[in-house]
Length: 536
Image 1: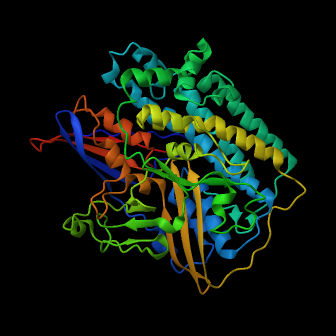
Image 2: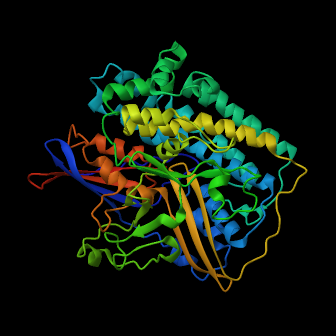
Image 3: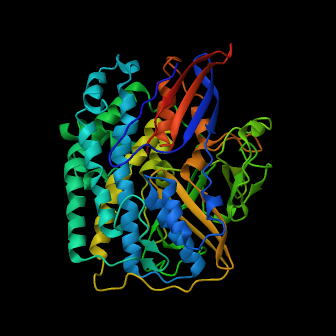
């Protein structure tokens, strides 16, 4: 018996892709897990032999929710290959567009995807359960509807600058297509402040943005919750209290190793984009955190393992050299392959190739490393939270919500820095042969492109998404992927309705529909199967 929950949230339709998560449960605890992505993407295959700029059109169609993020990194991949000059205004507009897409995703994901699981009947014994139902019940919850409806406001700003959202292609090598007007900027400021006034501060925080951003430790967060009734009874304050009461801070840990490819550029520090100079120009920094240490991010250390993926062979190669030689899943299954997702790995200096978790928590851990430039993001909050609480469903979710006030302030700043009389585009010179790399941080994590140009055409193209980092299968060394690792150790209260599996997978905001099958580890009997819709 299976049931399907389809959540259609305007202006978004159903998200493409299928993920099967198979787990083994022993004595009420998940002891093993397999994430199985069952659909072949194939965009990289389509792009081979196409015009150099084809990625600007094709890659935003990979996803109907983070298409702007795909455009952003595809454009920077071409900027590095073309050796362009990007006017400072264009960098600001690109940053704004990328950030407002993430801002719309934060409340939409929380209310329409994550929080609806909090009304599960498992939690009826909690003294906060009735309030959770009142707020978060799908469609009828008092917080659900305004949270979802108001989430669309930030991408109105994207449409002002980009002409449309989703699937815009207004970013091009050398800048953007078209200059905004004073009316565009003032209207964007008004929209952003309206979103802040009516959702971010009024509903979510119950306080000013500035007050929330004063929090630097886990104790600060707990003190903030109890500081006054407005904060305690805000959706944020209530969520923290309820999550602690039902134990969302006790499972879903994962590997505890993280990757962030970074996003948003300081206009003066990255107006001539290069692969080598990228890290120094990032505002939201790139980095790797593994084994309790911070490491500089280097795209050259990324590889993709296909030992358990539906592709020929068992190679572990850099994305510049990767291919898409897919095989029939029935044939692959005989070789112990079980997913169309590859397994991205990072060669950490002195440690070796590791599976790394991507996402908001990864970004916030990297933000805890002292900055080297004034324009770079430095935020010690989640370094402290990780040290005191460890990773979990709650911590991963809270990291994402923490970005709403942070990115609100950045967008407001960038809007004020646009010089309407300045340049927004400089014509580049097309190369005959070149290589380019572009990356960003989509709402759900590190998103990166590698392009190889030969004879004026795309010879090879590879995209590594955050869902690939998180949902990839085992590698040739039998290391499980981040979501697989996070599922292991999860307590299952009712195998007929394993809501805990939903909490863990949703805390990663996997951009696919998740079908979860539950098995009894002793008898091998399938207890039930559940389709968990993960839209964002």
